[in-house]
Image (tube, rainbow, N blue to C red; front, side, top):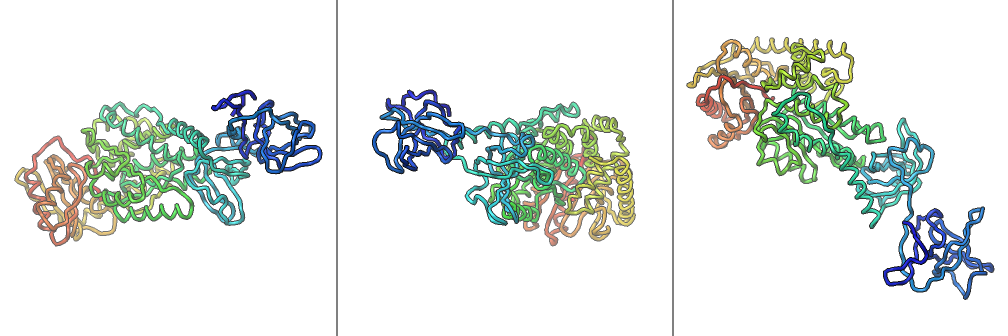
Length: 632
């Protein structure tokens, strides 16, 4: 705050006298300006006064009149600053006055300039986003307009420094930037919470900067696709939310369907977030700690996964001082089956975002989601795969990744057998990168094969090698070829055993129905899983007949379905079966012509028979074909 003159008038007509805050220094004292001081000592040649914790000086007896006592307040002006730094004051000629507080005017250093100020004392203002107690210092992660910096404060080994400081506080840190294990860390000399107007101004400044930095990059889509343009605003909303989450220092937990399209969706977004986190945080380990990607076997968020995720989040908050994470659901998360898991997380106010292309239940999930992207919400369908959407989402978050991701939408489309109009353009784009359709199919097969054996492990390095992201081309090609060949051999072995047990009938609508009990007539606990087995049988029957075909693979308490040329609406069929077969515990979903159903074992025959009746009553459509793999 600048004082213009000693003659300034207060609100009540009196003079204005300035009261320095405790942290004010000599730099805040101006000539000819009246300050409130407190007498701290009396000697023969005058009195000593304090204007703040670090501003003191002498009022000489030659300019004093009357008597004084220690602790008494007096209004003074600066008279002189001697060569040795000692300050001399004189009494100010004021009677009635109004007090105005003066805060120390810190010259703030942004976290983006710490590297240039290593070894020099600086001041940083920001929000505490994490407090971690180590065996030595307490590490406060502080976010300002430019990034997040770890600030090490030492009380004694393993003892919490500044125990009153909590996550969410706006603080001022005084310290010295030092290099620590390859990164810059602020060694704390002082740490204080901002309050009142100073806090409000800082929060407004940080909020304005955060909103500006959270805006997604404006990138042109990889291909010209009118159907995608409908979803672009929704993707931009998600990109903004994810970038803001990174800037706020909040962790992100990614859950995705464990298949080719799910991994083509999750890995680009994971990579974009990791690189953005690395730009924002001074801590080199931040990308490893702040984003976790985990596959989900089911096409919805299971309670088992939700309770595990919640437990890990609560443990990380307790042990590492992290905020609770944002949950990002990819290639699942749009259906009523997700609701129990979402409601569990809602007890802890964990934000949830879903990007999916399964047929949604908007009325069930919308109130539980902070953002939702799904082509069905814009009169499109599953042919726009989640992998296609998420490559564009990743580019909005971190556009420098574009060259590494140009082939990924084609892999996603082939993995989900998309018949979208845009597939030719995506295949052409991939061909420009050296990926012909045969190579793309090999990558898709290898991804499915790896996902099966990884089970609940993300397999970060392996999956990136398969997608040729940040890896050697030779290793990528050899690995893809090996795993794709293994996948095809295992499929051939499975079908060699299973095809003899496939039952066939012609339905009343002239569609071919093929059924197989995959529990008893297919190898269990090995590749391919029941869904993949059903899909492979379906594809062979399509080649044989060329007619409308439905294939059902069933076990004791589940059935997986594929359809070509038949207008099945599997989500609607599931809803009808719930009502028509009471007590069967029917649930499930998927796409319009591909999906899965669960039921209780004792009602299997009744559910399957009712299902076949609905299939027999469905309309045929020669132009309709399944565009995505069975889930499961």
